[in-house]
Amino acid sequence: MRLALLLTALFLAAPATAAAKHCDPVKNPYPGTRYDGVDLTGIRTNKASCRTARRVARRAHHKALGIGTAQGPIVRFTWHGWRVRGDLRPASDPYVARKGSRRVRWRF
Image (cartoon, rainbow, N blue to C red; front, side, top):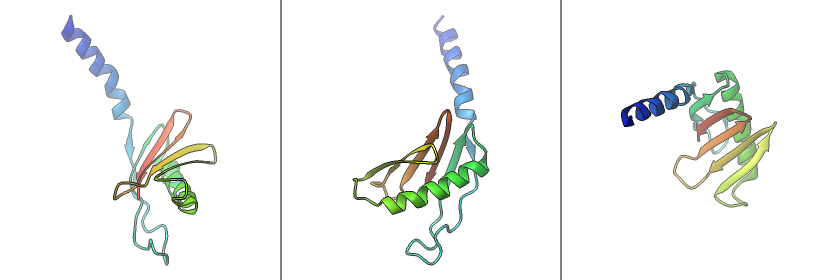
């Protein structure tokens, strides 16, 4: 009985983890600035195309840089209907954007 429950739980959890797609990084999105040469990496998406994920990462991150750290180490904002959250405390800032059931993650 326990084994059946465990296998059922694993089976149900597998599609959620398998749905995440890894996308190419956005290379040097800020040339000629102090962030010249820093890429947006680790772009992963659930239920969105890589083209959309890279666009969301590039443009939402640009807005995040404009907000700065005035509101603290955690930035929260919306960009074109996407709810974005970034954590500026670690060495590489992780971000996540959500719109409905779609999710995009990246690092700066």
